[in-house]
Length: 144
Image 1 (cartoon, one colour):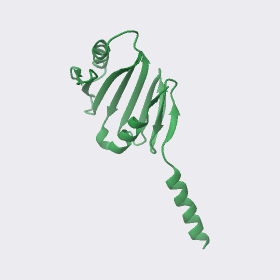
Image 2 (image 1 turned 120 degrees about the vertical axis):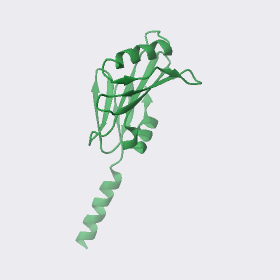
Image 3 (image 1 turned 90 degrees about the vertical axis):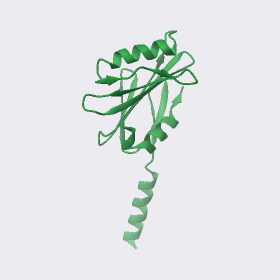
Image 4 (image 1 turned 60 degrees about the vertical axis):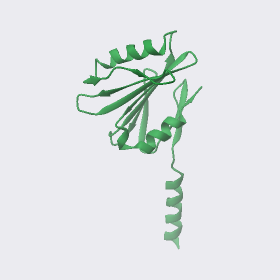
């Protein structure tokens, strides 16, 4: 009987260990279990604990720049640290996205939009490693 109670308590604990919201100043995001979040210069860096995937979220004042100007500026900046960076492409909403590859071959996808006077930049690396976690975390972003 004691073993059954202990097992039930452990199961309840495991099932209750879900995502938790973390505050990054301008936004919150629910961090998936098995991921760790840090903040670096106003950017949320959320890394899968086995280092197989990463999501970065940046929300900051756009300074009056257009989406195209921001996308082009970010692409130029990413060219300094990525082996390959494609040209930014606008979708039907005027949001921009582009692909990148690191020197070790990891594939990243970046998306940029404007929300009010702020830009929102998302960079997702190796989404195949945890597609459901990426979907859940992206869907949980709450701009303040």
